[in-house]
Length: 164
Picture 1 (tube, rainbow, N blue to C red):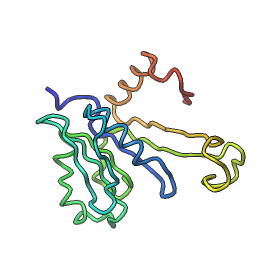
Picture 2 (picture 1 turned 90 degrees about the vertical axis):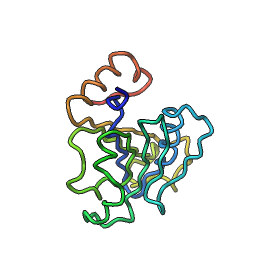
Picture 3 (picture 1 turned 90 degrees about the horizontal axis):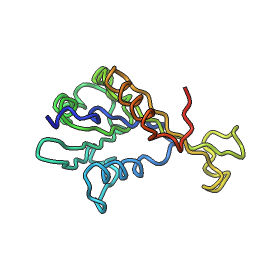
Picture 4 (picture 1 turned 180 degrees about the horizontal axis):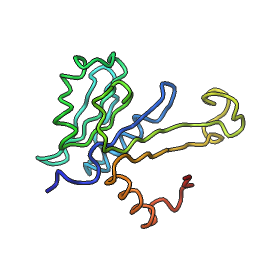
């Protein structure tokens, strides 16, 4: 059924000073729902925003920054249900503790200043054109490993630099 598609348990793993989380989420959500003008905002204060794909599947965009990481904090998010049948984009996944599923894709976005690699974030030292954007995909579980290998073999990453 539709609940077994490839994109369940997708995570954004973003360090505190990274930029692009909402932009990445907006593009992913709009692409997956097919709604080009879907209003996608950061869930920082709400903890979780949801977007309907169809009657069986939703995308949950969560920002766990404000949580302490205790099990009690996570109860209202209904993670067991979300991780079983839905898609999740999770900022600050370290707050999940032992709730992080073993089958998932971790996505880490970073921006480096190509003119000065010694600075931590490079945001203030250079304009956006001189910055190198990186997306690191880390598959966990055989399903995600196979899915990424398929995408590489089909040429989906041809315009990107793929590092082993």
